[in-house]
Length: 230
Image 1 (cartoon, rainbow, N blue to C red):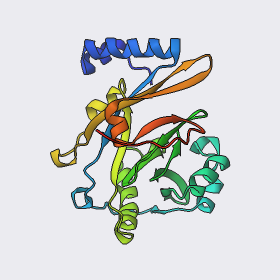
Image 2 (cartoon, helix red, strand yellow; image 1 turned 120 degrees about the vertical axis):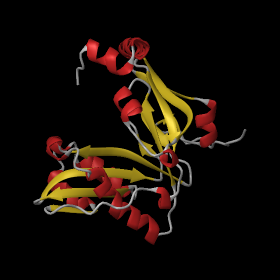
Image 3 (cartoon, rainbow, N blue to C red; image 1 turned 90 degrees about the vertical axis):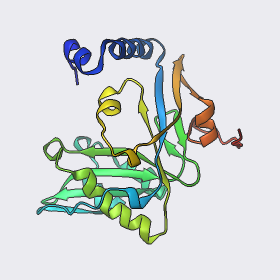
């Protein structure tokens, strides 16, 4: 989305606009991507109560077979991606409206793919939401809260109380500045990671605190054992 410069300065401040422009230039030059790492509180009792779906919505945990009819470009899904996700045992919830797929989220507790060259290590005791989509006609209708209900039930029934982990690009100000949460729901910043591109090869880097936590970027095929210490 191309937001006019005057609007960005008004909403974000000129320092953030300059920093965001600087990062975009570096991305074009060397493919730099820089992300802040966050962890959640890990308490299901502090999560918002389940939101009952309005009439017409069918919200549930889904299987590969449920999503295969929608493995098309307009849903940002393809058969290969679904094979990897469900083969990895990932947790997938989706919302349907009158039989049509309108939203989904993918969560994992294991190593997962970031792009063609990089993967993300997810440490034990954490869950990572790595893909989500909502049809434009169904945004701002609390669909994300609807999707949380079956996932929460699954966590409770299986005695899973993983802490959430996620990352946000440093210049993604719409997400960083306008995601409002109660104080007891605010995540904890814990380092950063990113990558640069040199001669077509993506090289990941991770800060000390990200390495200590264990949520780090690695090259595909990098199976080296890592020790997390102070």
